[in-house]
Length: 354
Image 1: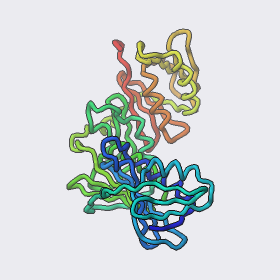
Image 2: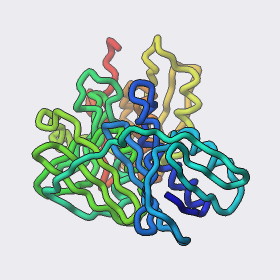
Image 3: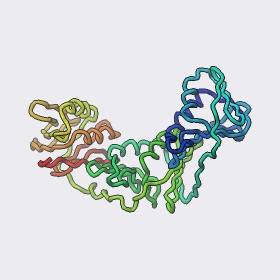
Image 4: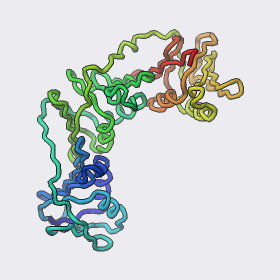
């Protein structure tokens, strides 16, 4: 194998591919990258054996076909520190030889690099940024422990839904008309590396395999188990809240960030929110109070409604909202709702015992 590549382009490719590599402690080859040149295109592959990520880079100089398995950490460090415009690679039976600022050799792995098999059953082209934004928004409510494993994924049917049992996010985003998906967080994070405008999402509902394909990248992985048992929380959207106010996201987040200094695990990170006629009064106790004015005038009279919530999940939900000004619905004893015309986020209130 022989090729020369633009350094900046290779740095970009490696920065994306390394997201899919394993640590190699148990299976060493998962810490390696597979470099392959075929017909003037360089393909770099990494895997942790659960997911694969592939980057394709068109070479603009003469090359010789071949392949090489290289330690990922070593090549990433070397290329990231290279200041020459071009880097050249050649292989012999034992090593890959690299010429950049200096001359270097890295031993080759001799075992076979893993591959995957995929049979496409359904496919749809979607806007990449919209998909990435859906994951970004819904991450705020996703479960982070394995108490209920299916809740650690993104459930996409007619909406993109996540919940940890306390926080819930229902986002008007779907992929397939008649097939649902349950995408693990690790796979969603790899999708964040895609940089083409559009991506083809292919699925095989029979075995739960997924493929994301753009002009320069491929990401392969599996859905989470438990899609059929994912809880249906869509009925929460039908709950009527008697009151609503509009809140500036930045103003509220800044206030919560300051009050968070005065919360702790012992009090459940609890804060109290008092709804006044023209403002929120948020407090941890009588000494620590923040005033957040409504973003628009409130028509209803001051009713002195007060709720208690945990500040951390509230900040997570507010921070993920796409709108600078959002609606805050209240008046129920157990829930509040935040959102706009596309995203609804629901947070369970703290009970008096808590």
